[in-house]
Image 1 (cartoon, rainbow, N blue to C red):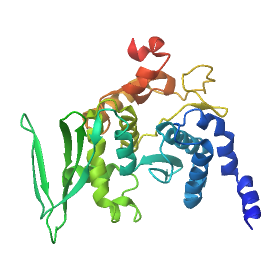
Image 2: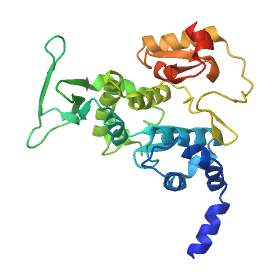
Image 3: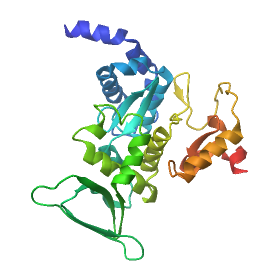
Image 4: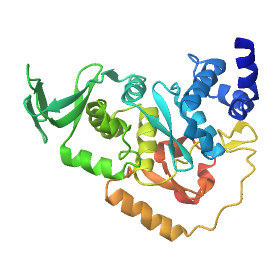
Length: 302
């Protein structure tokens, strides 16, 4: 039976597609993950969500490669979610915490949900502080959530989200209306806390992977496709060398710039972005630009 299952698995087009990219994925995986383990977990995650098979194959492999670059296991701390015909990478709160702790500056990152009967106080400004004492009994309804980063050597920062913040996020989230969405299950409190963590991510030093994960979700909420790792013929184009560039669709740069400016003004995506001519004029984090080997010839930096 197990031999028959193995044969069936190897004949699966999804399995074959993943196998074709094994070398590419191995080139970017961190040391704690082997390509065999990573691809096995990714295949199992796809097998559990049949709708992923109907997604654009390039979006699926791109999402998997992006998870490998971040060093997060698909189906555990990172998830492949089908939105229409696109496979989208979503990082859960455990993945956010894992990425935050890769910074040499971070000691701990507590995330908590707050309920209406809890004692909860915080202040902004020059005397910032946050205080939370959960109610011992009936805590009531969700009323807030927060994320704190405690730094090694002392000091901390925090971010609080309130119901109006969450309502805005849920309206933009393409999956929030689904009955099985974490927003509509017992996981909702951690979705609130994850939102706080995502906003805090922009202020955590030496944490580019966390900031990238936050940026990817901002793209989803803004209704934009995640413009992920460049891949060509089974290889990841990590440094933009030897890239066989695909023909670009006609894009009105002014219109894209106006949309990008509006998204920034509305706070829907980070202000730390630029339009990348190497990615069809899509918004990318400036942190990515710092790693780009063709930055000197990029008109965005002219």
